[in-house]
Image (cartoon, rainbow, N blue to C red; front, side, top):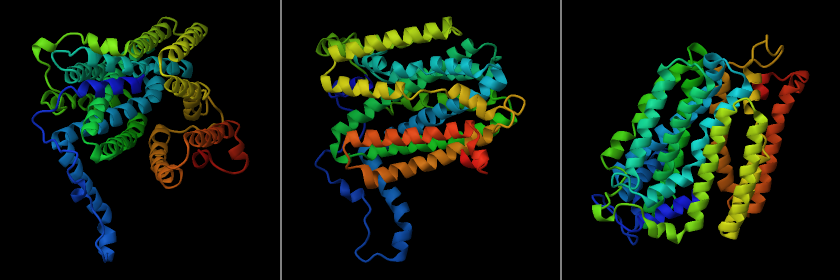
Length: 436
């Protein structure tokens, strides 16, 4: 449904062209902004190659998309999606243990409620396409979501941590900002990429590089702050980051044109062109909101939560095969099943790895600096290594081969948690920190 909403966003965006920005025609040669080695390279050419390549990449990016849009993407994918998303994810464990004093099961339920907005992205993409809020298809929605997110982070930082449900509601609003801003910015840069096909993957590389950098930055401070202070202080750091995107969007950096007054209102023509896809997005959003409500009302009744989730699974799976193109329905169902079968007990695991000796005698007893910061740094480095290995050895593989190989690697990697929990690493003389 996220793919569907992005496609419809691109479709809607083709109806108008951006004004006030330099548009590069498709026929223009973009190679003038690409760095190449001289015919007889010297040692200094090899040494300076990364810096010169980055400079050429930046020139090419600005030349094709404009400096204003590139700055906005920096705020969005370094700050909002990169730093905020990682900070809230990493801080959740210490916040549950030190501030809320709840167990792993409650912490995981709270996380499920907080992550609900990510299932609403398809519906939000549809809504922004069919109805221009205050005359804008994207900018107004991003600003409204950012205001809500900023207030939510301020509430998490300033209000006493009383109940898990109240905290889950605030985290829901915080994630709502990130999810809405993400889907609408994705739609916009996809639209611009389609207008400038010669740019290739330049913007995608820029966006994901910013996201990785933002995630790494968050991991550097979350762990030490959680160890030294009340974890709520982490949310104070998030407040200005959440608000940072408001100003560039309000100044028009998103390149979202105001819709003329006579063309405002619901775009019924778009809804009639894609009735089943739009209906599927909306039903999935309703099911996700219902799931959040069930988790909140029946916070400790896990049987009821499971029953509701299974019912929604059957409904959405059947509707996918009835309403979506066959190939898309199959891909959608495969990705869903692959996630469902990768059983997550993150709440219990996080508590076990960080529990002290009174709770888990002889356990790892990881501090937050190690568990949140050091492991995230190692994860980021190995993530970049994975990207390099993919480009070097797997980019020509079929999708089927890619999926079964990476699934096998995921299974093997998950087995290491079982080895630590059974303390087998200690029996062979390997410490928990090294093995983990």
